[in-house]
Amino acid sequence: MYQYQYPHPAVSTDIVIFTIQDKQLKVLLIRRASEPFKNGWALPGGFVDIDEDLEQAALRELREETGISGVYLEQLYTFGKPDRDPRERVITVSYYTLVSIDRLTVGAASDAREVGWFNIEQLPELAFDHKQIISKAKQRLTAKLDYSTIALQFMPSKFTLSELQRVYEIIHGEPLDKRNFRKRVLAYGCMVETGEVRRNGSHRPARLYTLKSPGQVEFVK
Amino acid sequence: MYQYQYPHPAVSTDIVIFTIQDKQLKVLLIRRASEPFKNGWALPGGFVDIDEDLEQAALRELREETGISGVYLEQLYTFGKPDRDPRERVITVSYYTLVSIDRLTVGAASDAREVGWFNIEQLPELAFDHKQIISKAKQRLTAKLDYSTIALQFMPSKFTLSELQRVYEIIHGEPLDKRNFRKRVLAYGCMVETGEVRRNGSHRPARLYTLKSPGQVEFVK
DNA sequence: GCAAAAGTGTTCTAGGTACACCCATGT
DNA sequence: ACATGGGTGTACCTAGAACACTTTTGC
Image (tube, rainbow over all chains, first blue to last red):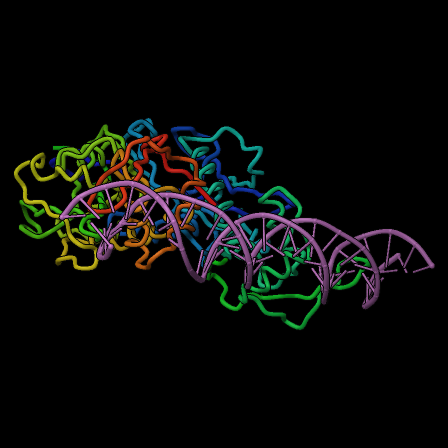
């Protein structure tokens, strides 16, 4: 037992993990193993250890619950309505991250719990205020697309410009001009041709690009 | 005494209060009344009550320690390094706000503690990681000047366009073209002429403007 | 040889920047 | 009458938007 002179809240982290799959923006959810909201869908996350940095806690939960590591992680917002958790006062520091389609080896690594990728437009009922957290993350992501190189975090180590364009189109929900798009992202100067190409169907092969500094997100424009 | 099965951190809020005074961007600090950092300068703030919303806590501290109320308040970032407070683990949810020069009736309302406005470029030694918090707030403020109407929060209920221009110049640290500036801020469409003028020295009087929706910050551009 | 995606430049337009003079007042 | 800050319009320039055809492959 731990005693304090004044009541203390519990502090947790929750992580919104985005990916692009089947031309959809998806979010990773896990099925809760215990009450409250037992068997309900929720964001991965958990309590912060008493001697653990907040971001470290988020990285640890991410690793433990999904097997994902070494990703771009950004603090999103801190949610603290007094009644957001029925057990006790829990303040949650939320983070979000973007993972590439080739890291979708989730599920295996997760500790026997059911996990799933959900289209952000068709989410199931969610535990706590997690719907609100995802909504805020989507907002932030959409905004950052326009003034940073954050979208590159969705890409695998080698990718084509058409694949990258599809990412922007899916998130913004509208088609983009191919020539203007290439002009713009190449001007960022943060990717290089590998020299290789990808053959993918009965048409001209696409050049493969790679990031100069993977994991780095810069402001642009 | 309050008991928990697992150790819990304490949670506080700290508020960075900006104003413009004497052609300088200033921050409000208070002198600490107790250990640690007794008599040192620190941001206003304090512990979140167990049944209190985070933003309510920030508003309460703001009121109690400075007498300021009814202002635009925005969550900034949550700081939680395990050793940021020598007493126990304290996670702080920081907020920032902008107050107009005519609200500088601080000091009187504060509960007998010494308070002071400090030029952001000449801060004293600060308690905890408050220097870092202020630095982050300044960053956010500077960024928001360019894509929101946040600067209007510095203005008193009636103000002239020259006064507003000075605010932008002080924060960005460079002079702006008067005609382009007026074109831009009037295009925001969120202020109206009062019809009154202010006589202020031996020159043409300036027209007074007022906000259509005080306290509201919009995205622009 | 045909279907399907990859790759490539130029023109047009709008929004941002640069810039100089008259106005109303106090002394 | 002069010093001081308030108020106003236009020309230029650059960055973003619109737009169509050739290339390379698989079948």
